[in-house]
Image 1 (spheres, rainbow, N blue to C red):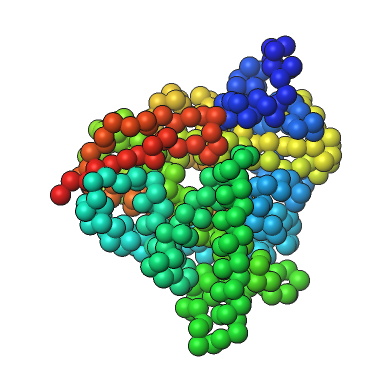
Image 2 (image 1 turned 135 degrees about the vertical axis):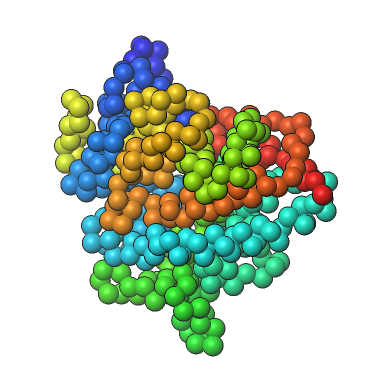
Length: 411
């Protein structure tokens, strides 16, 4: 590491370099582990499949107390499953495990597909639309239908806007962050009131087996019913990550604009290529830069030490662009996943390890399934890309094409 980098506070470097910050530090050391300080705290950064397993081993790293308050106040919610460990985490996570089942993914994708098809005529009636915003509305409508959450037509746009704001403001200060906090407060209150109403009024019962029904009746490891606020937090933790697919659909549109040869393959090659395309979008484009936890005891990894309570960072963006795992890692090549499906702990845009027992996002299977479906629909849609700023700034977290991808649909 250069002496210049040693003099730059890491918090400032993260703010100015964004996604490139940790990969650049690790590249300078040519290693899969790095000792550093973050916000004045000792930290250990790790990368690679073995490091993923090390990071998710609860004897090494715990998540409780690791997520900063601003992230909980915007993205996950205070008291969410992401903040728990051990039996508490496993029992709470059982609420989300049905999201891994094929029939559940198919049902959710079907509702979102219907919402897309309903939206296209409205897009054609307008001179142009911002795809990022429109997909947020499509997904919100579809996922609420699937989850059993009642949503009036006049509530759709405001809920979609709030869900996107929660994601957009989780890793920043200033207006985006405070907009995200207000959005979470509004929707936690709304969803808590909904859960309370469903518990009190059998005439307003949630559809049997729906996400709303499961959240309403879930009990934690102690056997106690979730409070309405925590129930609202976890209900949002199903709906909000699905809405976050707006980022990946915007990236898919960006990819089809830069490499239009993939459009015909999405139209004609069926689900196999669509799956590979979805994986490559998630690998190539930046979303989460890294994940953090706290060292349970003093840890040493590849000769680097961190004391008990120190930070452990899993370099997501760097691993997804590691030449040792993905040849020509800065080239967009969906074909790489036709020959070699991604290993569980190799491709980690939504975390690593076993989604059934660990902290990996249980909604990842759904994310891939929905992205496959929307990418194929996007490829089938006739539209033009007018002149606009499609740059993707790496110093903005989470980033996206600056324009949100403006499209002009054709009759």
